[in-house]
Amino acid sequence: RYYDQLCSIEPKFPFSENQVCVTFTWKDAFDKGSLFGGSAKLALASLGYEKTCVLFNCGALASQIAAEQNLDNDEGLKAAAKHYQFASGAFQHIKDTVLSALSREPTVDISPDTVGTLSLIMLAQAQEVFFLKATRDKMKDGIIAKLANQAADYYGDAYKQCQYKDTLPKEVFPVLAAKHCIMQANAEYHQSILAKQQKKFGEEIGRLQHAADLVKTVASRYDEYINVKDLVDKINRALTAAKKDNDFIYHDRVPDLKDLESIGKASLVKSTPVVVPLSQKFTDLFEKMVPLQVQQSVSVYNQRKADLVNRLIAQMREATNLANGVLASLNLPAAIEDVSGDTVPQSILNKSKSVIEQGGIQTVDQLIKDLPELLQRNKEILDESLRLLDEEETTDNDLRTKFKERWQRTPSNELYKPLRAEGANYHNILNKAVQADGQVKERYQSHRDTIALLCKPESELNAAIPSANPAKTLQGNEVVNVLRTLLANLDEVKKEREQLENDLKSVNFDMTSKFLTALAQDGAINEEAISVTELDRIYGSYTQKVQESLKKQEELLKNIQVQH
Image (cartoon, rainbow, N blue to C red; front, top):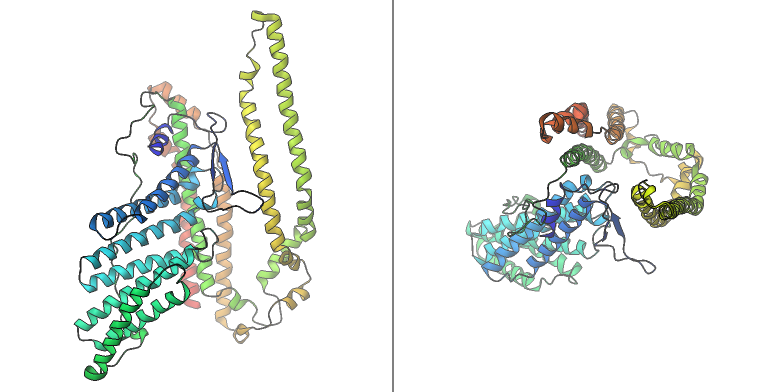
């Protein structure tokens, strides 16, 4: 109900740092803090931030409710599947909206990568619930195998998404890996029963052997998290019986694992869309409040603009991540860079040149050293500004007392209220800057040696690079030259995207005058029509450039894969 109320009042109040300034503070859900400090927290005067954090907790609560269900009866299975899918939808909604809801980078727990992984984990658990129900209802083994294989796929995808990111609790990774193996083993087990029914006794043994290997892996690596003794016993009993029958009766050839036909997949789950109101009996406490039409229209327009801009930026970032992933899977450009075996790869030289041109390690050391002094200077400026406001307010109150009704000027505490709010905001910013400085120093120290190495002469760089060079045999190969050209073109596309992203962020157009004109002329504001027209006029060319960039990358990646 609180989330519904937040959604209801959002268009009625101009929540921002400069208007209705209400600061919301949340702690990172997965940051346990350190010995000398608490967990990371973020305070923003943003209703979108509050909505995002509340919805995150709604999703977390739904997952806990699902986990507490009794899975031995239909009611518990249905409730668990429902709540897991709701949780998945909540996390997916945050992934889609968090960039537009916040005016800055979110904390790790609500970042698109983290909530995207959580959404997938919830789907995997919902799919597993349907597998359990199908098993309980004794459905056909072919169907059960497909349900289990799809659950294994979801768990595997979730594991891949968070494998190299330190965003979720460390216990999550082994559990996801174990679940992936368990569901795959269940799929193989039920597919082996189908093979036996079809008199494919060799395939039956091959699948049971694979299932046995999978659960053996779980028992040896992840026994601390999940007990698979019953599943191990069931699979081993079936494997022993199948081998005995085949050895004495059928003598069917057992195919290799790679020769087994892949098991199909059947997904019965999807993320439940977030549709307001979420609660069944929601009553808007501010239902009769009439909003200021122009402010409301500007707010909605800004939201539309933010959604559009962040959607375009997200598309470009996802495309860049995709390109980087494809190149990494092909070991490019490393596979073709140093074909001579005795020179420093060009990409490293470029990074070295960039670091040196910006002053090298000495400049960074000096910047880090200057941080405390700069912080103190900013505090002094802010304190002096607030002192002047206090002094002016005292003078104003004294004169008002002295001249009474003859002193007609606006009271100081009202006149300078925005300045005081801004001062409080800067005070919060400085407090957050102290935390950010600590993180910067910590990260810099962990990478300082590598940065220092990039400042060394080329000969020292070359000496620090491993001498093994499997690409040496490709020297002079035409394919290498073609790949270099394609990679250079792809780098150019990435650079153009960076500039395009900066251009998108820098576009600014105040719609207040347009909405005022419309209200004066028509007595009402058709916000959607005006906003859509203006957004198309302002951002139409940018949208076209983004699509052209995506298409160009698709063609380049296709050619790179062909040449590789």
